[in-house]
Each structure stands twice: as C-alpha cells, then as structure tokens.
Amino acid sequence: MAGVCFAPVPHRPHLFFQIHQQNIRFDAVITFLGLVHQHVKKKFILVLDRHSAHRKAVRLLQEQHPDWIEVVWLPADAPDLNPVEMVWNHSKYGDLAISRKQSALLWNE
Image 1 (tube, rainbow, N blue to C red):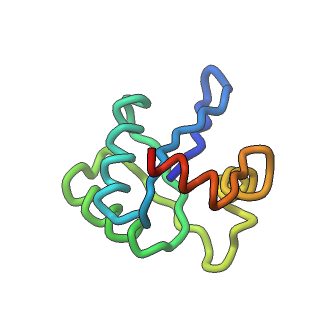
Image 2: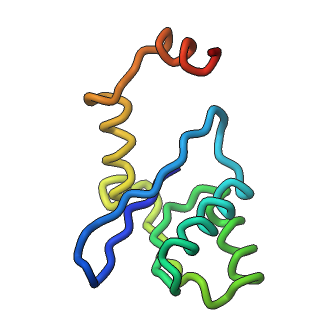
C-alpha cells in the first residue's frame, strides 16, 4: 500500500508505503491513513481509485473523523491518473522487482 503526499510547503513529495503479504483489506487502509494523518497533522486531500477496500475505509473514516480527509475518486479504469500505479510498476518491473523465488525466501525467513 502506498501514498504520495504533495504539500504546499516545503514543496517536496513524500512517499508513504507499507508492504503486506496478503491482499489489502479496509482495516489496513484505515490504519495506513491514520499513520499518514499522524505525520501530516492536518486535513488532507485523498485521491483514490474505487477499490472496495478504499470505499469502505473512506466511509468508516468519514463517519469517525469527518475533519481528517477530503476524498477525490479517480474514474474507473484510469490507472494512468494514479501516481501510486507508477510506484507499483517500478516495484514489479523495474529495479525493485524480485522473482517469486526471491520473494518466497524473503517471506519465509
């Protein structure tokens, strides 16, 4: 799971990420966004695709903490608009890519 944060000051992007061994569920999204909120310390705009875990996490977070986030939903089937997709592509196919065998060794240690 990853998020790219652009702040007006100091004009430097930040990358927040977590590595999970399993598919992401809504509770992991809530935990991740809570950690981002602790770092940012103010309301932020959240741009998300329409993954079911994202939709449920946003609904629950907006009920519990309506002043934390403002949500902008990406159109369906538009990965080119999502900057986090570039992170995933780099990790899957670029310098960060690892084979299934390497992955099994990492997770089974």
